[in-house]
Image (cartoon, rainbow, N blue to C red; front, side, top):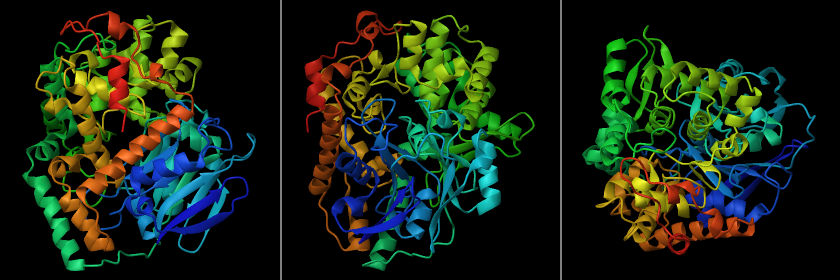
Length: 568
């Protein structure tokens, strides 16, 4: 049996329920999307009382398995208007497991003038306490105040000023192993959904005493070691261990898909100034608090995160990921890692998604708000986001809104969500994934780039995208880090054997993949019920009419091909 804690944000009542279905066993995206589709009316107001916010850990949370403590957060998205699952690392999923919880639900909606509250969950009680001391503060200060009050080992989730103001690119900041709220469920505006319920933070105390009870402890121990060995043997995950996701800068530059100058080009001159080797060398040279390897959760054998220091060796930002390096770097023609790190730090403090805001600034630059490559201007714009100025509000609403307000036609998004860091006209497999994702412009669940023999042709890309939508969604389906997929993408048996050893439940690879496909089918159905149509699953018209500078390719994927990629 798996426990769900339902919290009414109006009355403060908290009720535990028990469930034993396979959705609850798997947890993660399987569970969050199941519950959203089951309990949230698809046509509801994302900021209304009928939307709910679900926090789900995965089937192996709280165990010794590497990279298995991710947190899936689900709701109807105010950014896309459809279903959303956004996930994050950190320690919140672990603390939930130690409290015996698979899912936490925030329900109902207080009046707009209701005082802000903090949800505090411990082994003896759940309560809503006054959160007024956090209001208006940045995420870093909120994180410090929460640590002072509840201890650094508590699992905390909070929002920034952008979330408090219901801005559409607002994320949720989760505690890392050091007690800092720096691990983001950033996409889809879910920070604003939490704010609409007048919850400014949620805390899971470090007093949980629930420990795993294994059906076969020895088999589980051996299986956990197998996962670690597979990760160490895999060349992709090994590369991430040294360089993190920043290794993708050189790869994308070589393939001419590094988004540059508001997604008009696929290469940037001097891209090596912001690549993985430069970041690695800079961190090593500056020393101090800098770390080239860093774990966002424990245990983790990959450690793809990093701590980027300033010139004095003091913490500037942790982490800098490839997606941010591209959307706030090459996309804006910024060639200085310190500038990118500062933008990232401000975004984290403001509580916004770096991808959507980076894409929005690219749109603003095209509109003439600032010059491409202007380091001073981008810091100024990020501070406007942090200070919630009128311009900052526009940028923190994502690139679709920014383009509409500023009169820019070339807006890199699908379903209102800014595109990730792969220029789609140069990689038709990634384009197919963007277009067919139920989440809007998204890449983690259908990452084709490494397996595209000819990236600029659309031939075979429906089947390729669908293949990797399943491979990627497997990890989200059970709350495991996406990078584990490189070690089990051709054989899920090591993970499924762990489920057998833990729960004494046998799931075949085909049965598991059918469950993944059911989740995708359910998500697309929710979006359809919400009024999202095939015509919404398109890029801006300029992607079809204007060639990308480097490849001279236009987007040529048809609605019928997108529909096939969405058919499960």
